[in-house]
Image 1: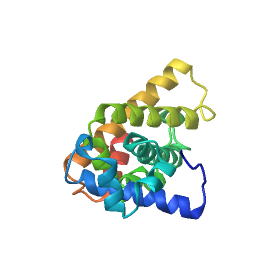
Image 2: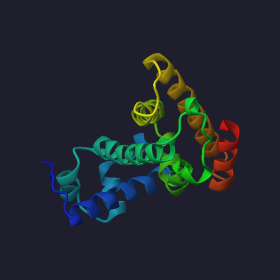
Image 3: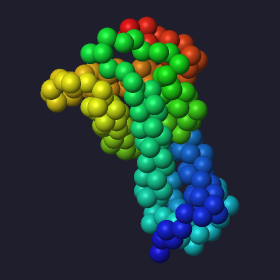
Image 4: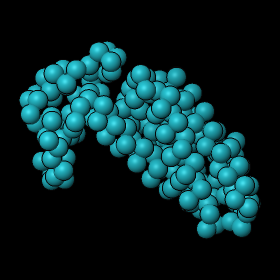
Length: 186
């Protein structure tokens, strides 16, 4: 039975389960992790786990959704006033998506390394794309086809930069990534 409570206590408990899953993913694949492993790492019991989640996949989905929601908010903030057709340059201080990725680098790296990597990559790309479209639609007077094309180009550029950053284990500081991205697009 899943408890739909959104109390502070429930949020804290869910956070501890997510953190436990991330710690376990650092040393083993998702397929090898059991609910027992998660509850032992979180120092809770199975009953508490099942009060919040159906199974470990439900927990992974919740963790993934948190990351995607944060990514969506960062995209909206970063690109809400920018579209290339407006002939305005990107402002370095407006691009917060790289800060979000850096702050969540551990979870993002671990989630992209799990067995469902392709599914998460596609969800991430769709999140980026949909939020760019949503942000740009009111800004510009372009055909849906052109707007979609522009959003896809920026989506895949962002995804490539973020993927490269994950591959290098986030060695480059967010400010340098942001500056390079803005320089490329201006």
